[in-house]
Length: 238
Image: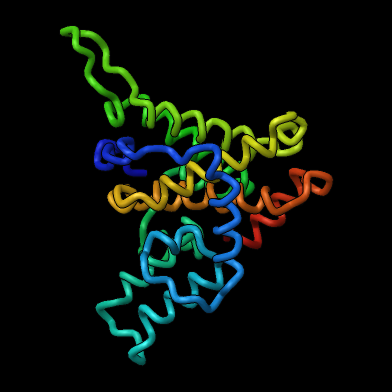
């Protein structure tokens, strides 16, 4: 895992989507992902698109001119991992990369726990850097967290709580509203230009967090359980 979070600190300068826009954002996303054959012109949209759309885009990107060239093989490996079409273990195997014991343990965990672990690690690294923090007027005073950083951390904590134990999370009276606002802010984060400057593993982790929460959003609360979510995630994210 790359630890240099400061490489994309500009991400925290983005403004958040207002609550009144949440329903429109979610509805628009659902409508766009339902059309598999639609053309995707901007790469950041692919992080939020369906698996079929990603495969279709990769086919156009790497195979539209005929056979895959040798010099494009490494780019293809990175692209399919970047878009969450293969696991970290599979990507490591393809690139002859040795994973640490911690990374192996996380990769072998249940999908939702794997994502929850990523969120926890990401939040820890945010706390250990100055990314998204602003200087106070007083000399030698500790840096203050920007409004956007505070909102991002709050959003990720909510996502972690939901994915760690969805059955417990759905008992909260504001579950639907909390899930919708979390999806909306993560969508805005992933769509920001600064997102492309993130380390590869963090882009994969955040986009998979969004995809996992979208699956939760599509399952009715009556049918929502940890076991059912695990099965959906195994099919959809790996």
